[in-house]
Length: 269
Image (cartoon, rainbow, N blue to C red):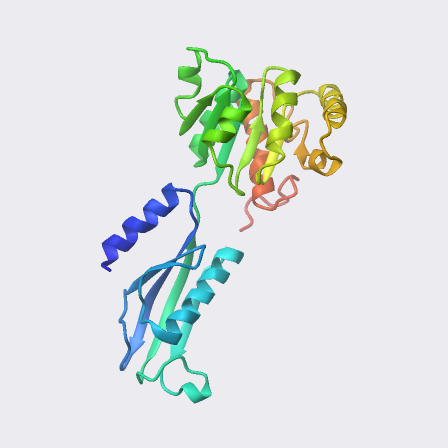
């Protein structure tokens, strides 16, 4: 398969929300099955597109690619293809170096509620590079401006949204709905998804009331513990735009494994 086709498949995979690893031959010497620039895609289910040489070496590359998708880290591999009796994955007589690079789709940002704060979260999430999916149980012509930067908008109850959208494990759900009744309808459905983060806007008092009602509705304590509420880092934010910064700062911190505290050295790294 030609290299341009490999890149087309890589882009298509990311657009479909799929993870994929790209294996590239970066250096060779003497006799080898494929030379520098040969590429292969390895998908999360272990299937592949293209080849870097076949045989035992390629099997090992696929295994390493799966590991790279698991730990999200690239890696460089070197193989001698000389003597299988000492563990070499081939007998061609040469050596080959490969680079494996995992590629992940844009993380999902699911915004429940398209009011003033929701619109600001959508705009900032788009600017930050998220795949922004917005939903609201209302149909309102004013939402056209609010969702202009959303990649997808689904109107109707939360059941309609979950029928239309696959919530991926990289998803951050931001609930900035207009009232507690919307939260009570949506949260029991959303905690059943694989979302990495679910945050709920509102005062601490409102959250205590919401949490009590959710418990009465049968939501497990473990599911309630998954929720971040009140949502956002404490910035003394007031405007919708400032609140959006607070919310997405917390989302990024959670997705990146941070602890939400201030940087001790802003110049570090």
